[in-house]
View 1 (cartoon, rainbow, N blue to C red):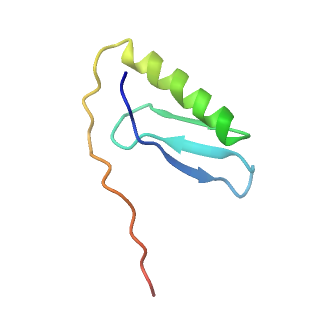
View 2: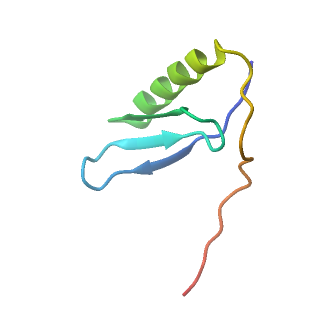
Length: 68
């Protein structure tokens, strides 16, 4: 079992949740609910892993809050 971190945002225009895995090309999807997004991301990642282990282009570190 492998664990990947996904970044999730909500599109203001469509109301859909959009997620991607930083550094993993092609690992992105969307869904009407967070549960649907989770399922869709899992399917995409499983499909991408069929081609072998990913060579992650970047490493997710975290988020920062910036006050202006």
